Length: 254
Length: 221
Image (cartoon, rainbow over all chains, first blue to last red; front, side, top):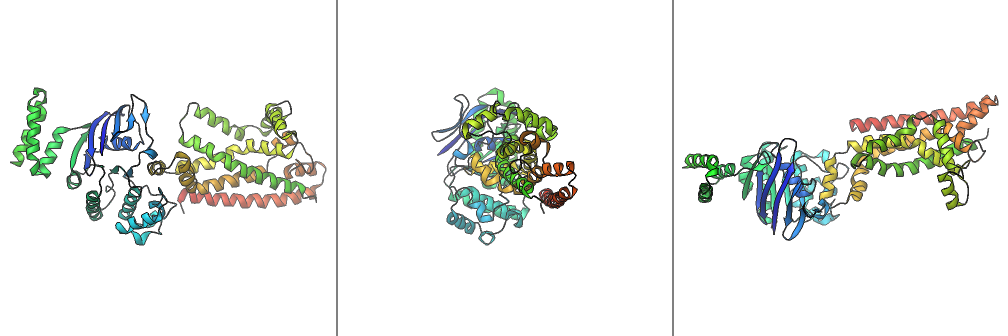
């Protein structure tokens, strides 16, 4: 299973232009400051926004191809999406929210137990805490057995302790899943904690030089890979600025 | 005192309310959630009956509802009976006249719903139609109720449009407001006062209910 993305979209302050792919059982983090285009990217992946140009494929299935005017609506992509803000349905109970997509109460019950919110099943979303709501949102996203899981800053509104606990739970969940997971965050440490691959984004683009720095700071074992990147960059003299940053980063680590 | 006009008014108000709430919900959805060319013109057209003098609206309705008019001819071809000066005719006129009163509270309620809830529903596999019934409607119950009550009391008080399209046929189109007017003209003040006495508290109670619902919608209490 592989998600392959190559999209462009004109935004008010910059042009979004990103390409990446993510295989199953991998968690790819799009990390960067606010307004970098991360959420737009993930919304385009979900089918909630359309790119101006580009192509998104999941295995051999084309979700978006602007040349061929193909656009698969979100309801047919069969994915799970945990939104940045709480988007539970206020008129439904916790179990009603989790079972919303499928109506499968049994599956909802087992997910509620798995995420330790079984005791809240009959409460409305406004009667539970922020952490509990996000747990509920994760259950809601998981109940359809999605082919792709999208997490859009799911911990940003939580306090530090709850955030840390949920991170651990998502990390465990990721190890159990055999689907690609795309995680959007502005928190570098969160990205490094959860992700197999980190793609830093600034101004609508993936910034390679940042990626190397992140890797070096968080994963010294990645140095070999970084060195390969440097060799690749050295073969092209136009990358001098990027190279100088890389060299600096290596010096810091060594 | 003949209570038939009161009964007719209640019947007309009830039918208009039921039909309009069903009709206005998808129209409001269209106005709030769907982008299309000429939307502002369409919205202004739907709101027009709110500002037009009832006699003007009644005059145009009269033109299209006579057997020579488009709607009147169509109605007669389908049902075999005329539309003008009938109870069905005043129901049609009431639907047009009260449409903006149905749409406005619904629009306020629909706009208050977080769009991300709809997006979440789409991602969870719901079509826009299912999301409308499973997300929009349950979260706009107060707005729908306010809309129904407003249409009901507005229809109870209708006069000009009904007089133009329905005339004053006893048992058919002579509703309470027309009966009151005729009673006053004939100096039967007692009959007029009795009917007013029934209409005023009913309208007042319904208005109280609307205010409570609107407050709940604003403050979420």
